[in-house]
Length: 56
Image 1: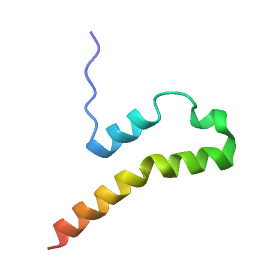
Image 2: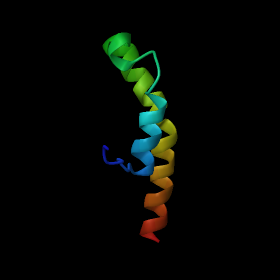
Image 3: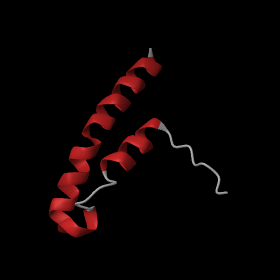
Image 4: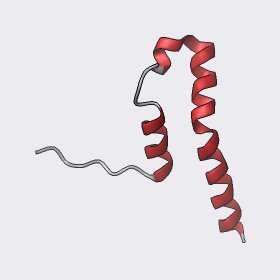
């Protein structure tokens, strides 16, 4: 039985956002980059909030 992999919240969100077609490699460099940036936009906002909280 394989071991269960536990991902951090941001990694899990990105994995779920990119798990279904269209895949980044199917989109080509320009559209793939735009898609990846859109998928990570919410994650970056959450990370900025966490960083602000940690600095207080």
